[in-house]
Image (tube, rainbow, N blue to C red):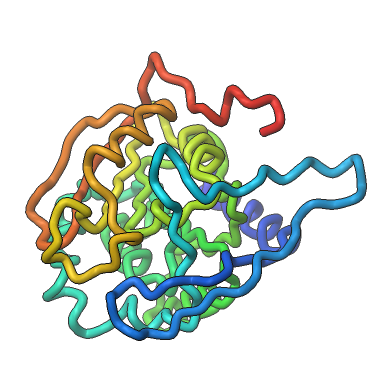
Length: 269
């Protein structure tokens, strides 16, 4: 339980020390006229020389245009009735390899669609850290936790370049259709890498760019080749894949013992 208390302490630090921010000009994920506009990201830089400089966001990363963050006003889309039929969410969960007692991070957790389900799978001896950059999303998560009586999910308000995770404590980090929206991919990958236990895994679930039949805007899709290119460049190695989902890739990455994240080489980070 000591690790649980440590996570809870970090949650308090994250909630009260960070300025909430989301990217501007958010796109609808589907190719429909869904209004999911974002807010202008607040300027986190300070004139105080003692405060660390916030890294600049990127618009293009390794040849890929970075998508805008889905705004919290689109949260209902995450729990739509059709999601199981369209994405086979239960099949994805069944292939995550979650065991009782695991420490899990739901990165970009939104309103907790997966956080709450993973909390049941890891049980009372494990926990799920739900990280999001929008406090409104975490508010929805807390409401759903209370409604379902779930007490082993810990909401953390992260920033665009730092998820506020403790080092060497996480068994599994799940990223469902969220990595392509990272405005600071190198910093985020470096932080996640540090948070993983030696045998920990990152699971990337992204809509398939190779498949034109997947009814999602191209900006919100990624190819296997692109995912692998970016993860391997940042200190990870592909260890397995699951190709049974109707719309998405599911790729498992572990730490590359010979690799070092690109962000870790930058002395300003």
